[in-house]
Length: 152
Image 1: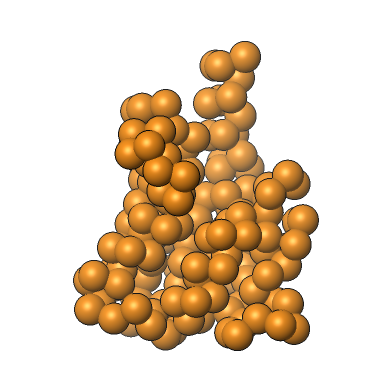
Image 2: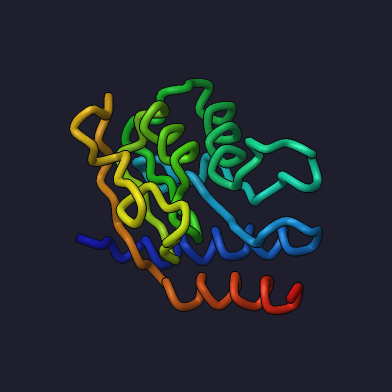
């Protein structure tokens, strides 16, 4: 069941997404929140800026959260992201042992939290975080549509 704070956290992730669109990166933002509700890390897509194929918003936010928590295990934390995580990012969230993944827009091409694949709920996953989909989905999707429409 979606929690009331998910929308507030998604708004933080949307603010991060705005930072990505300042460059040429797809405007995806993410935030990692501790079990106590404290922001541990935030990030936005940096693939173009950093010339790094792994610099997705989720990876950037998880790395920052690990540094902040001084631990790679982010037990009980929530990863909030404006776009459904891909396989790499969903796998990183599972590896980090987050308790929850909350996402906004669905990704029918590469989504790995229910759309194309469901890695967090796969029987073979080492850890199975809860997944909350569609939080502020239309706002998140509109941000992406605007970005791609401007480039077509």
